[in-house]
Image (tube, rainbow, N blue to C red; front, side, top):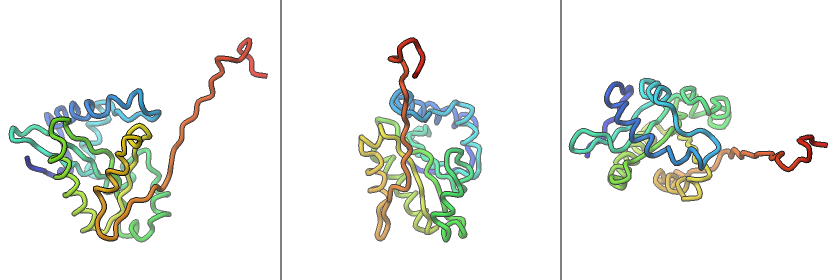
Length: 183
């Protein structure tokens, strides 16, 4: 296995990575309120965006088996408020060192080693840049300890991950309202 860091990815690599991505994120379509599965066009646009580094782990047959995206410019992440991040981390923002982990995924049969390669490369980059790195985890994945696992994987001397915000989704069900009129 080998890891490369790409600023842009196109062509067959996008197709192969999208298959891997869809395999990983498809289960969240019914387990998370937010839409986690990008369309192929949205995914391809992200893969072409040079503000987002792509950490790709390749197997011995040059097939991608793991993919992680790291936005080195938080304006590249549509669901993140750059103002929130700048307000919270002004010194990092002044140095251009506010990053965002978009997603990380590993082929189910290649997990441990590919994940370790990716996390090792990411933590070296974050430490070298003295960056702050945000990431989000939906409740379904957090219940499976993904958030804590990522926080632990990122842990180094004097580095810790703190919850900085929570988005909670509600639904008001009017099915039981008599006559369809609330009163």
